[in-house]
Image (cartoon, rainbow, N blue to C red; front, side):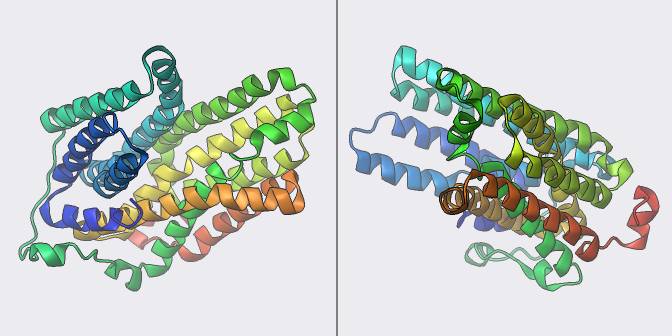
Amino acid sequence: MMIMAPIWGSLADQYGRKPMLLRAMFGGAVILLLQGLVTDPKQLLILRTIQGMLTGTVGAATVLVASVSPEEERGYSLGLLQMSIFLGNSLGPLFGGFISDNFGHRWNFFATSLLLLLGGLIVSVFATDDFTPPAERKPFTQSLIPDFSPLRGENSKALWTLLAIVAADQVAGSITSPFLPLFIKTISGASARLASDTGLVIAAGAVSSSLAAVLIGKISYHLGYRRTLVFCMGGAALFTLPQAFASSVGQLLFFRLMSSFFIGGTMPSVNALIAVKTPREKQGSMYGLRSSVASAGGALGPAIGSALAIGFGYSSVFIATGTVLAVAGIAVPLFVRMREKEASYTNLL
């Protein structure tokens, strides 16, 4: 998925955003259905690889939402999308566990296939795409090559900074996953509630991020996307650092709620700023690259967290994460500049 996301984004710039979202959803429905029928781990490995190559609904949906949303509603629309992602990631394991326990593991694949099929039908009927094909459409083979020229243009510093923030955000969201139960065990001292306490901390953080995505996304246009992003990165760093010194589950829960809230509020502003800083006809490639960076950050986070926890103790992970978030927040006003006409209606510095 990390490799293919920019390629699909490039095709979206040439052939439209809605077709790419339908490709991801209907293609995913077929692949997940086939995964439910496998009889050998090698078959599953092949299908999972094809799934990563063919799907990518989040990236495709982000491009479509960003392209069809009015400027003043872009942050709110992307916030709603981000809220849906957080809620889906939270509720998916819950329903998946219920299905596995009551009907067997294979039915999870069939249920997911059905959800993607229904989602694709909803998009095909109700979603609109005001895509205008380029005057000179590239040959299909050339369309497979993503256009990253904005990374070399006048907004290159801003775009590189925004991509770095995407990576930092994904690392921050996933870095504690390998050792969080162990950390909770050290501060609670009661193993009987370890699973429920861990589930509570994770679920509460996901709900907090979901609410933040839509609430902060709603006001980000009026406050200014850049100012909102700086505020959220600073708040995330401020409430991540104290988690290293939490001495009870209650304290950890409070700080996780607050840090998750600010982390959840970053992505609508980041996605909106990418749209502002990228020409409309090249946004598919840039959002594809953004998806690749997010995938890489999500994969690296647990590995980095495990290495830090083993080498320096659990507290070091929170300190390192807070520091990264703070540095990323400081980089925003230094490298993400807004044109004067943008600053006039968003009241930015």
